[in-house]
Amino acid sequence: MNGVSPLLFDSTNDACWLVTLNAPKGNIIDTSMIRALTDVVIRAAETQRLKAIIFTGAGPHFSFGASVKEHQPGEVETLLPAFHDLIRRTFECGVFTIAAVRGQCLGGGLELASACHRIVASPDAHFGQPEILLGVFAPAGSVLLPERIGRARAEDLCLTGRIIGSVEALRIGLVDDLADNPVESALKYTNDHLSKLSASTLRHAVRAVRLPLAQRFNETIQQLEHRYLNDLMKTADAKEGISAFLEKRTAKWRDA
Image (cartoon, rainbow, N blue to C red; front, top):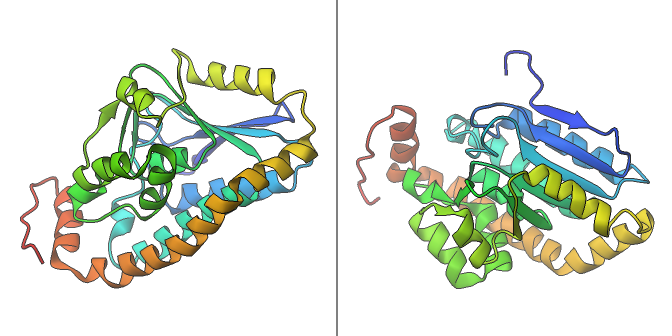
């Protein structure tokens, strides 16, 4: 990050924080950003008056996804568990979360957004889980997307890697609202619907309504993480897909 903070953090409104992924243009989610996001979520759980967090991206995009470079053997063993712990802690903190999306929201970026209660997107936004095109799969997306859009639509995205626009994302329920300025829309939503609520009661309600999802995530993600690190990453095609992406060439699959 060259000494630049991976996040921009605005807590001037003590009831609603604006957290900006700050690594344009792609806002790649690497271990440094995961660590910073986790620190925010931990602090949120301890901040009594906080009701909501809005996640957005600096520049024209939300996020191109998790660091492909750090998906290589020797690094992915740190990156993947840390990212899944971030999602777990986001569920547990009891704060309402909104993803305000412009531009590309892909891979780990979509997993982070899907973990939020609400996604607001600009008309130019695009969404996808393209991991399979790199010879891998999306563990968190495999759990979160079926919960959000149903199994068949989640399978369509996870098993083809295709990218969809904001209109289709709205139609299938991946996105909750479209707005030219997603951050302003998210702020308006929190002001209109959350500002008059008790922060304490809201936290209990958030944890209650999300308890079944949190339990399913915690149980399933451990199995998928083990399968990813101990089975998938030993295959020739997983290594080839990552290498081909980093070398900017077409992958040569061995189907093994």
